[in-house]
Amino acid sequence: MTISLVHYNPDTGVSASITATGGPSVGGYVNHSWRNLGTCATQGLYTNPWYAEFAKQKLSEGLSASQIIEKIKTEDRNHAQRQCIIVDADGEVACLDGEQNIDYIGHIAGKQVGVAGNMLATPEVLNAFYNRFVKATTDNADKVIENGEQPSFVEGYENTLPHSLIEALEAALKSGGDKRGTYSASLRIEYPDKAPIDIRVDWSEDQVIQDLRKVLSKVEGESFQSFLGGVPSNLQASNFP
Image 1 (cartoon, rainbow, N blue to C red):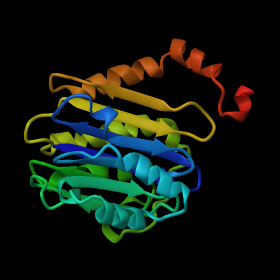
Image 2: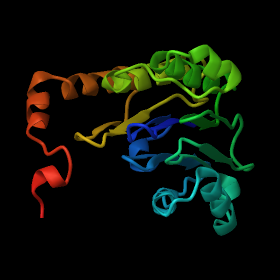
Image 3: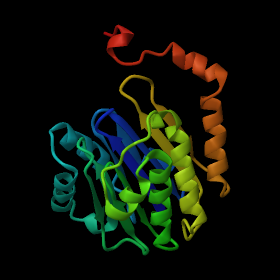
Image 4: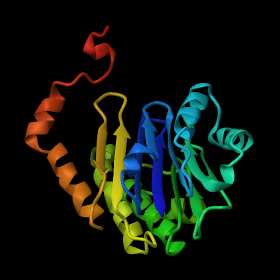
């Protein structure tokens, strides 16, 4: 199994993703977040890691998520073995669910938020993942979940975004998760005006949630926050080159 949640906010340029799988080192291959652009998760029976660079290039050219998915289908003759979910700069979500992936495979394409997974124990995993995130970050969650309305994000929700992502993943795993167990996870958030958060658990003995929280506690600790306070907020602020 691999299961991912992707989120992009066109109003702020914040891009976020979280993923988990039954194998090692998921963060090196699957979830990708790009500030002021969009986000992508590429996974499946045989993950195509090149989808991320392709998606980033096409997003930079102004293509929509659905247009990029169609191009992937055209250009990758083995796309039936892949799963890929993309959120574009307008918040549109589109997904490829290759038919050769192991069941249960599926996705939820909301507005600005999407989840996708394969080799899942049950379809409820996706609902739990999506619903928990939407409830934690919006003030119109019921309408988003039931009617597909545009999300109205809670003011300042980005400040607790890492916790919301982990809580959503935890809900997904508790509802069934991976048929094989879950052994690695990755979280990435890119902000337009500060350094990114990039947390990876490359191998865990089926306690990835605890390990993600352990790393996040170090990132949010006083020492590391002091370090981040001196990190340039963007390229211009770094006086480089």
